[in-house]
Amino acid sequence: MSGLVAVSAAALRGSRAAWAFGVLALTWLAAILFADGFDSVSNFRYLVQTASFLGIVAVGQTLVVIMSGIDLSVSGVVALSAVVCAKVASGTGGGATGITAALALSALVGAVNAAGVVWLRVPPMVMTLATGTILAGALLVYTDGSPSSAAVPLLDSLANGRLLGVPWAFVLWLGITAVAGWLLHLSRTGRYAFALGAGESAARASGVPLGATAFTAYVSCALLAGVAGLVLLGFTGTSSLTMGNPYQLLSIASVVLGGTSILGGRGHLLGTVGGALLLTLLTALLTSWNLSEGVRQVVLGVLIIGLLLVYARERRT
Image 1 (cartoon, rainbow, N blue to C red):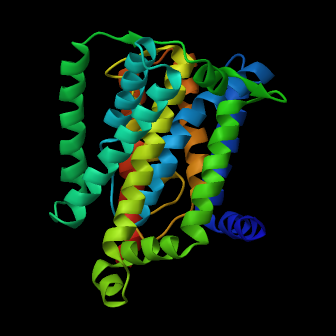
Image 2 (image 1 turned 180 degrees about the horizontal axis):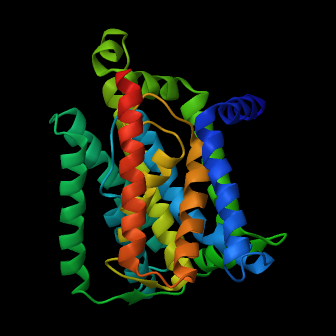
Image 3 (image 1 turned 45 degrees about the horizontal axis):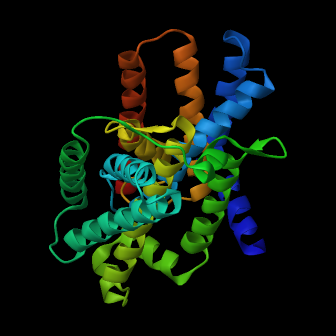
């Protein structure tokens, strides 16, 4: 734990992760000054609770991006997890069986993504986009387009309960981030992921196990998307085919805003936490100003494109 704290402190001393938290602080100040309700404890608690759903997905996305990959199937996995759990739990399987089935299928999707990227040599963007498209079609057939409702007490408590006033969802997010942070920044697998992101040819020549590293990253990413889907099911009580759609763009944006290079090889999970909090706050602020969904998407898209151009230029220099 002390090693993880030291790595996190070093990341904050760097400009990238610290920048995300700096912009977060300025945005929060602007929200307090120019919007109603942002200075209340209940609003703050709600923001960190909803940021946790995005944050859990973004942690997994960071693991993949660090190794110069990307996962565009996370939206489908979020929906898959929630739909399967709701269907099983509302049937004869029960909540525990539904949760198990949802996580197992999520991990399977991650394994398929990794197999396509490693063995078939399909570009990650193409492979994961194809997987996400297949999931969307399969879920449409499975549900006939109808939402499914289910009451799973464990998920309800996890999504809506509190620990000493702090939402359990936020505690779960921080716990996942700590475990993933150890894996990425203090373990051999993490060093392999950074090496692979810095250059596949050099990593291969250095003896980095590319297959095992990719499988760990993609399966972890899909599993965390599945966890987010379960917590969302507990939060809303209902699953739908489109419930994961916002998290595909926003999870990538959280990673980029947190200072992780979209080209791989550089970054820190602590910055991703700041990025997820920033995007959730920014979305809430734009919503409070009665801006439309289209305008919000334009603002986020322009921001992402600008950061991608900056990081691409840094990588070339």
